[in-house]
View 1 (spheres, helix red, strand yellow):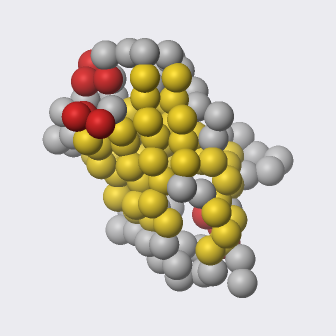
View 2 (cartoon, rainbow, N blue to C red):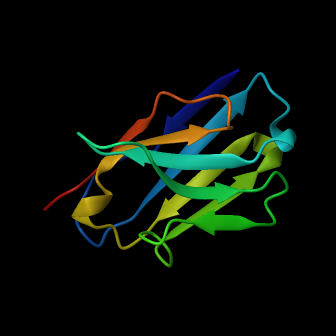
Length: 111
């Protein structure tokens, strides 16, 4: 099983990024997918989740209204659209199946 995140980078406050998580080696449609993040010196924080069919989503209060999680099961891919980014969104972002982790992609929000 492999999860590969991409799309991170340096962005100014108020900017946007779209993260992608491509999965392989598993039956993708069987899994709820979570996005987590971890800032230096802190624990991993759940950011968002999407059910296997993409019908239901859930968000941390800190990102509600700014982030949108979605998935394309034909492409074995989950997305995290992040708008109105704030410096406190700076972290390494990981996708997770509940059993498997990707390597993460770094998001830095700074002017």
